[in-house]
Image (tube, rainbow, N blue to C red; front, side, top):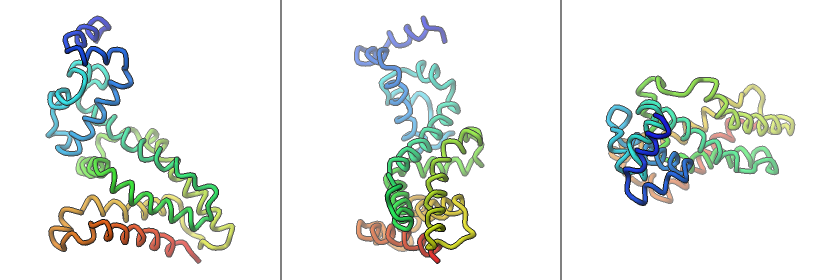
Length: 223
């Protein structure tokens, strides 16, 4: 799409939408947020670009300009969702904590963050149905997720040095266990609560499960 076509596409919108011409980053962020909600609700095949455009502050034409096509938008939504999760982890400031305290904090944070970011979990569920066909390249994804691994490597190394963590584990294994314990709480909530009731999904129940996640991870690593 040429610059003239972009201008024409935007100029055909109403006055509030024309103001987005001066804020391309805002346009892009708005599209990603709306698309994230849509894809999490309906998946890739069930979502239509027309529906996304109707809920954004821009046009269908501009969505194609930024992301190419629906699959390109979906791929960027996935990458952005992982990126946001890593950024939240990077803000934890674990360096000054004792190893066991730092490991509990990241485990319990992951439980809470997954609970707050249910769209993220649903996107991951949908992409697993697609056998990770639309995921960004492995190099890009490993780069996005390397900060989480480095964080766990540092905590685990400090715990080994202090003699309180047992040897023989890896940061990737720890990341798997933490993710698994936190993921199920969101991914299987509907079926689990349908069978067993909602008690574990009350505020008290969630606080208990969060503490269990921290306890289990520490029992895995402590000598």
